[in-house]
Image (cartoon, rainbow, N blue to C red; front, side, top):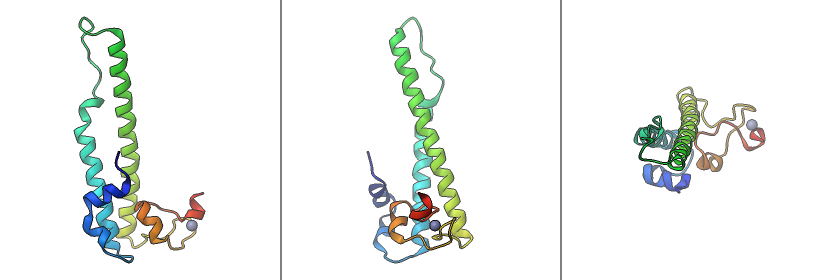
Length: 128
Ligand SMILES: [Zn+2]
């Protein structure tokens, strides 16, 4: 299992090297994550297809197992979809010059918090 930091290192190595609040750095990180999410959506598409097992050759238990795997794959996809929505909202804020400010109180979101999650829309206090 990759952590978000590993992921940023893999996908946007240059972004990690620059210091300071460079908006293009956050954009690169967000775009890289979006690309990765879309790719894993595409590569796992098969696992979300309806389960069509031959009842003759597979038992009841394998069918249940296959359905469980499919349900997990669908849940994963929903998680990716939610994440993509957050990322595209963050990219819109970048375009509108609102990125890095808390959507609730308007104060700056510290770089440290953005480093943990570049798509975050609120400061720590407002996110509680
Ligand atoms: Zn706030």
